[in-house]
Image (cartoon, rainbow, N blue to C red; front, side, top):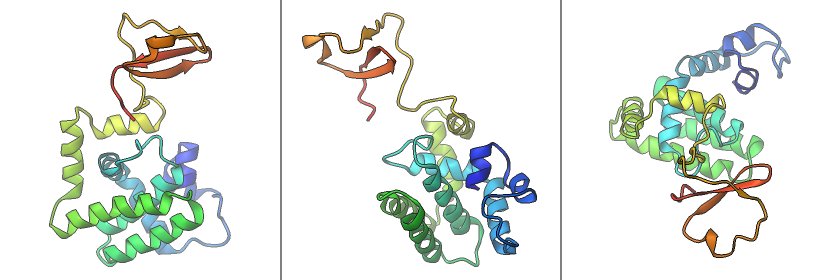
Length: 194
C-alpha cells in the first residue's frame, strides 16, 4: 500500500509487478487486505481526515496513513477480525515502523472510530457527512493527498502584501500568524490554523 501511494499506482498494479518486500509469495489474506483497502481508500481517507485532531491527512507520515487505512479496513469491512485485535496489531506495527508519536496518534484515532462502531454509527457515512459540513468532499481529500492543496495555507486576499523575510517588522507582527510563503518572503494569516 505504501509503495502504491509513493509510486502513484494502484495496489493491484504494484502486487502484479515487483514490489519492495518481494521475498516469496504474499499471503492471500494480506493481498485481500491490501487490495480491499485500495478499493475503498476514498472512504477510509474521509474517515481519517475527519477524525484526525492533530494532523491534516496530507501532512501525516505516509506510514501512519497507510497503517490507519489497513486497520480501518479490518475494523469496518472484515468481520472475522475483532476491532480490538485490528487496533492492537496496527499499534504494534506503528511502534516498529512509525515515528515516536505514531502509535499514540493511531491508537487515539482508531479508539474514537471503535467507540462509534460499538454505538452502531455508520462511520463511512458520518465521515462523508462531516466533510460535507466543512464544505469538502472525499475528492478534496484525494486532491490534498496528491499535493494539490495544503490544508494549512490559504491564498491571501488581494490586499495582502508579502514582506521580506528577516525584515525589521517591529510591532507589525502582532495580531496574526506569519507564514513563510517562499524563499525571501513571509505573509500573515488572520486565522490561527495550527
